[in-house]
Image 1 (cartoon, rainbow, N blue to C red):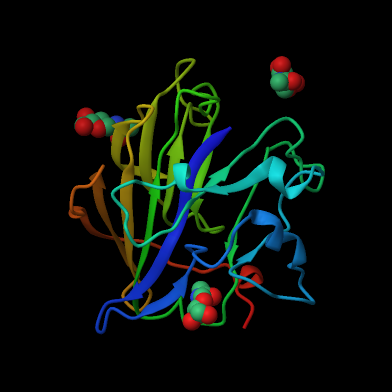
Image 2: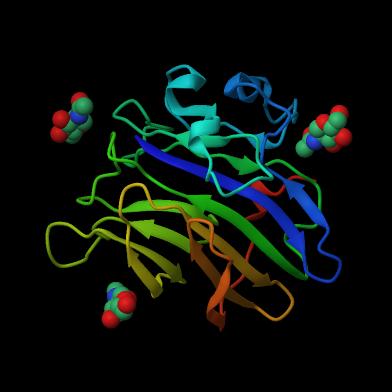
Length: 222
Ligand SMILES: *[C@@H]1O[C@H](CO)[C@@H](O)[C@H](O)[C@H]1NC(C)=O
Ligand SMILES: *[C@@H]1O[C@H](CO)[C@@H](O)[C@H](O)[C@H]1NC(C)=O
Ligand SMILES: *[C@@H]1O[C@H](CO)[C@@H](O)[C@H](O)[C@H]1NC(C)=O
């Protein structure tokens, strides 16, 4: 089980407009995700990559799951994977929430904001690679655990990778909130990394690096 809040909001830089809001401030449970389908694109998230169990096995909402320093969110989202989290007979275990929007979140300069944390209860395994907060094309992503092909048996680093190269890492300790923004420039082809912990202000931690920015079109339905 991996406790995290996912994407908070997508903000366009010039006017700081919220392009898409994934905070779920209007929802009282994750049950609404069951209403989503490709022919009924309701709510903030596409929910189709997950195991066979009920939605509450994999996604839960609660005030306890948000960063207490985040006054703009009513609650956070706990995302869980377990051995039932098999999708399309794939070897990986998956629970995915994908923005459902026709807003231009793949154009110009946009900031993808989110905060993540795990606790000592059912923490993510350090023995396996976890892909956390990623684009399907993997041009920017958080990863945790022993990366596929890495030497050793375990790795407790939370890392930010661009095109599979680590740009930043920090030990992913239980009970510490990591606040993050990907500063993506879809025109230039770059992504920068803002980071802070707890209630601290975000800081530009890695200036923009060149990236093969690409919003997987299958997932972008307008
Ligand atoms: C939440 O509800 C308010 C009031 O009805 C509405 O203005 C707002 O657009 C809703 N937000 C989302 C993200 O659906
Ligand atoms: C999940 O599956 C793995 C691999 O088959 C196994 O080692 C592990 O014990 C299982 N975990 C649970 C909780 O069943
Ligand atoms: C993790 O960060 C440290 C500095 O904090 C650096 O020395 C190390 O090379 C980094 N590891 C990876 C895999 O990037």
